[in-house]
Length: 110
Image 1 (cartoon, helix red, strand yellow):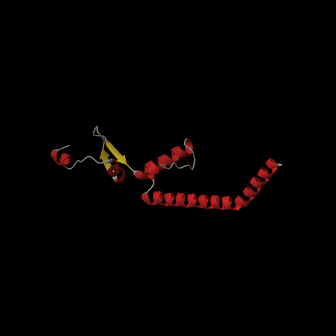
Image 2: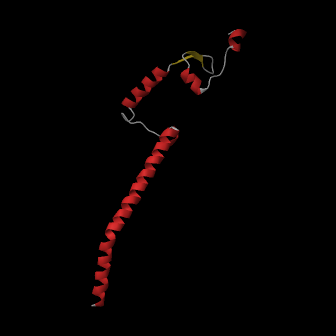
Image 3: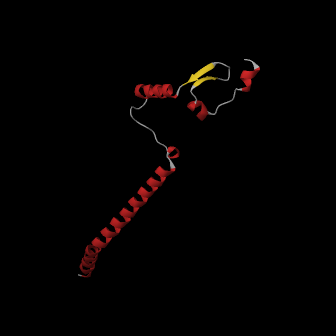
């Protein structure tokens, strides 16, 4: 390598390296051709051979803020429905509970 080549050389971040199409050099000066499509194909091959087929692991950190907001709204609606149904059940069951309590009191008095 001459001086002109070293001036044009720069260290790529992992994201830049993934997006870069062409020849790169590794730390030892060896050529490294990185191809995202090739890596994705290798990943699919690995998953179909050794990993769980058709299973994608999703973590909270990998979700976008819109997805997190949607999940939070869905959880809020779910909790509201449970509270509403619980209160309706309690209101509907209240007369039956009162009758049972009244019968229990009357039975204990006899």
